Image (cartoon, rainbow, N blue to C red; front, side, top):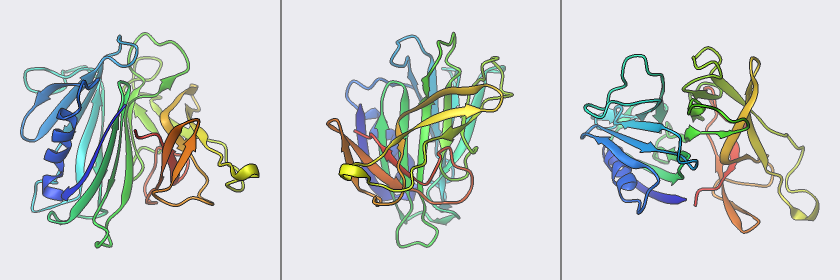
Length: 263
């Protein structure tokens, strides 16, 4: 697992993310395609047999006023120009750090965790702006409950203006009819409980057509009681970082407080 983070002016955000991905030593994701305004990374997953692509684009962050980058997951990307070939499936979402366009000189916080199967990214807009938000993104494979003969379970989810779930590249019929999976987790009435222990619940991704397909890697729902943004919870020698996320729009998560294994 690799991790990088920083705080930059919004008009420098895209390049900072590019530099972060390129700076990971022995990264499980290779740089597949790059221009000044886009970056495509590729991974074979922890199985070594998957075919995963994530495309990051500048969105409007390089403009005089901006508030989002654009992220796409795809089953294939053309090496020549970074485009998605005809007939290949993909899912795209804008990943916001402010609720409205703002002066691109404002600062943006970012934290990025990378494994062979997924990229988890948190961004937050300038705390001095009333439009700044705390937003979490998940890009890549979920932990699949059943063996699948393709990498269609790779998906995209954001906690602000998302799909109300993870939108995968394919559903189990290799199409995009039932490819949004909502997150389900156990809801407990209080936290912490007996022994001062915190309850963390896996985020199970399911829909009405197919039932549960899998769960998110390294993200757990945490009831908001007893925790604050930035707290750390240690479980079996692993430290999970607590994020309190901005409400509004449709989240891929079961609630606004989660604990994430970032590094």
